[in-house]
Length: 114
Image (cartoon, rainbow, N blue to C red; front, side):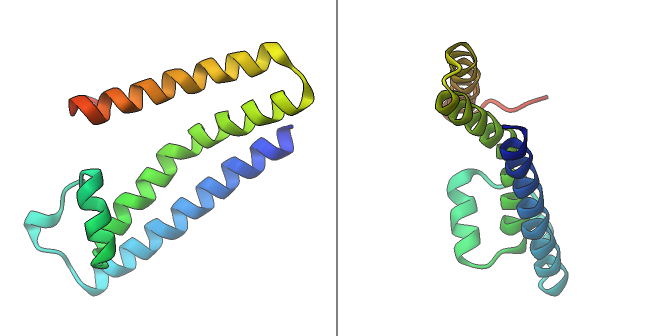
């Protein structure tokens, strides 16, 4: 199980690093206007990616990095379920429910940290 979780965490980290690196290259090649240097909401992020915005690619790298721990919980949930560890399966499901609820609350209320 540790190998699966390790792979998930490493893959998430390397993928986010690669995407962030690409975003940095795009920003260096085509510098954005000073007004464009802000974190993009999800709908604008999709539009920015479609237009090849370096800032949008940077934001995507950060989103991937933030979702890496969520992917870890999903991997643990699946692994525990496959191995028949009911207690840990339910605990992982509870953690995933809390993470999902907090994400949905932030999306629908516009809440931000800090």
